[in-house]
Image (tube, rainbow, N blue to C red):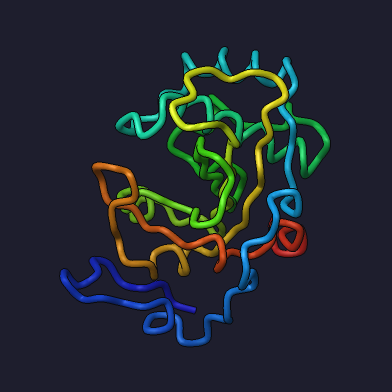
Length: 198
């Protein structure tokens, strides 16, 4: 399937189905209990690693949360812990300018896990790199949290394709920059990822 062209026409409101007519109905029509999502509980070793790598990996957001950088690293250690049962199979600090895990890009948000969230990607990133998949992780912390501690849960909230990501109309979601955003209700369950991820 060819990717949607850039740039998206200014002012045109596009739906998922205008660009991808065969997009299936949302797999998660009702937002399930967070306990139904795969998750990883951060250990002290993982938290220490997040703080250590914080000095190396600086997330250039605009302080949407006070721990954007820690949330990013936490997502990158939670995924290999869930997939391989070893958080050390991560590429933090060694993948600058590259897609995180082969053809899978990990996105992260530090926010309470709840309905209404989505997988998000800066439009500049979507133009520069085109991973096959985006996987959204949610560091489940209260608003205005400024520290990361052991015992915090990271949810693997769902994944979508690059075509589905860029099919969404760019907008502002608690940011001062535009992002693509796919509602979690449209994302596939992470438990279905293994057969398609390489």
